Length: 430
Length: 204
Image (cartoon, rainbow over all chains, first blue to last red):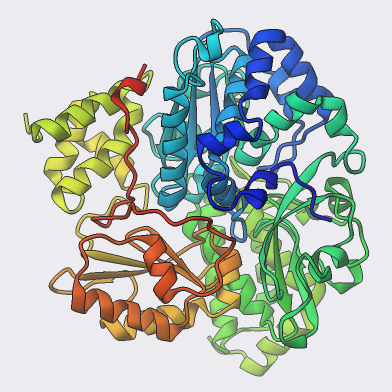
């Protein structure tokens, strides 16, 4: 079930998968050498397009198509988004710590394809250990001639800088990330223009996730067609899922999409089922921003398009599993509080709405909820994301606000009687 | 001019020079200033402003947006995650245990600036929940009891360097994933232990 593209090296070479020596001994930087020596930038892009690799940061946009939007003006930039902060997600951390050269090589391949000579990896501030590992890999790559002037004997130059963030979830949103990387407050920009046209310092910029970029060496080595042969249509390749919560075997798993949720959560070599023999109550299929699924969905296939059909998403690949003992109001509060804390404050519906949702949930939890609070929560949600439909509409610059409505909509859809019981028990006070 | 010592100044200049525009270095320079001053000070903000061509007010405006540029953190910044995965597995109990052991309420610092305790949102350690960090060095699979032992150790021994690998071995439980081999680097201040410009010749 686990298929080795991204995790193969670290699984085979526990002691030194992060070193240049091991990377080179296992075929590392061959793809970059080959791209530089034998392929034009357009040929590299064509392989990525043929692979049908979709972005692994959350939105799932086809990588090659995104690259195709890059405007012609120079200079232009590549930014690798390592601001992994979506609650439940820890896959990029493992890629950074255990196989950083795979990312460096992928970034160099992307830069060559895109005509970029300066690239950045924006790592979230709390990832000190992963950033150290990546920085060491970058220094090794410079010393070995895989970064810097005339890479691998070619005429191609690339500088790569590891940039540490400072504790702001919103900087995972690509335009907020670019503002942060410019030394500004990490507030999202109104789009359009999209970064591919006007990104870092207003220049054409491609922003790709760590996992997305880490796939590139394999794609260049084996060809886009080979990657496109893995997994179901629309969800090609392998995918890292971060399993957490009440499963017996939490962790990151590299799987071919198309398996079922039951396989993923209960599979002997995957989630391993529920802890303490308890029953499954619900799970969040793609990070805290994703609407929840419940046991009736267990036999649905895990693909990007099937998730969308169910009104949710694979998002960042974070699967958060909740057993029958879970207080769904408390769980929803944890998520809403997260978004209230991380709202940048630019847009009123998000800034005020997330805070009010947090307060209403808090009063329900302390037994002071009112029966009208259920509809109040939905009304606030509707103000942030009109119609509460999927994919979400928004009254805000970025999707953070609409994301905060996901737990509200989920508990009302699947557990309304449980929430109602909380407010009737609590009476009409508060 | 509020120049820094020559070694720090050299690193700051190299850092600012790595970016197409110097203002990009505001964030990394703020970390340097914090490390130098033990927190974010008015003098540090002024120096970062001079180095990047901004006004101190602009730099302060940037710094205040983020949670990690703290003015007067304790020597040990203890950040306990209570986001959803940690919440499901007892993050709040770990936070309460840390508050009890240190006598410091979440978001506050004690009188001698030994401990700052804070609840934080997701640390990217969800598979090893519940998790906490000391000076941004991660420990996964902590119990309330282990968290209290950790606080006692910090108070009694006052270690100069905080290392994730050592903390995990002694106070952690099941990690989010196999960390692979350990490493010697660690944090000497409540600032992420990360040097962004290890090789000067690596710059453009």
